Amino acid sequence: AMQSAPSREATDIMSGWIIWGTALLAYGAFRFWYDNWSGPLKPAEIDAFLAQLAERIEGTGNSPEVLRAFLEADDGREFVMLNLVKAQMEQVKDPATGQMVQGFDLLKRYSKRFMPVLFRNGGHPGMVGRKVGGYIDAWNTEADPGWTIFGLMRYRSRRDMMKLVMDPAFMEGHPDKLLGTLATFSFPTHRVVSFYLGPRVTVLLLLALIAALTHLALLS
Image (cartoon, rainbow, N blue to C red; front, side):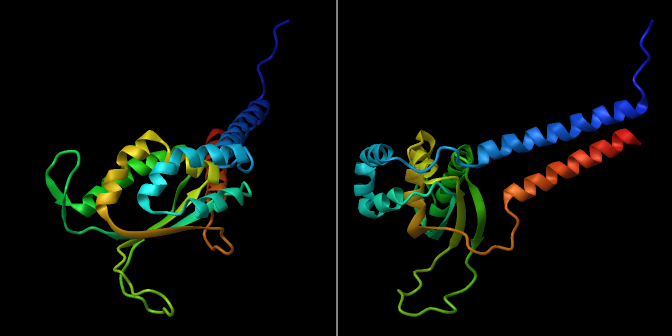
């Protein structure tokens, strides 16, 4: 005997499973990329990273001891890097063309190279903005050097930060950063309080909304 076609109710149930199952798989794939699944850095990794960066650290005048201490204290968690930058607003020679350009343009070109590498290593900007006034509240600190912009950059892990620093695309763009920056400092932070929804919640809600609207459209 010929089998009867599935009922509308059975088809709707099956469609619902497919829609919500796909949304769940998509969220799982996102978390697989977004979260650190490799744990804290191991001593051998730290030694290897620092050995590869030794010459570059010496050239910038930064402290290898400070970097080593940060890496050795790795807890495997994400962190946010606070960056303050005083951009070069005068004309400098473009290392690629030899023409004179505003240094800030080179800094923006560096950012265009930096962002894909950041995303590739599980990071992203948390907030970027421009300075609109002098220090309103400050004591026992150096005078405002004339900061131009600030950035909060989320890193998936300290391991991913080191991979980013050694990425060829990042290294190729670094001369643009040096020419486009008069002064800068950065330090890592852990978020304590935030009233902004992070990507984990935002992506979850977005996928749930898409799944719900798709499901409703099929039921209508």
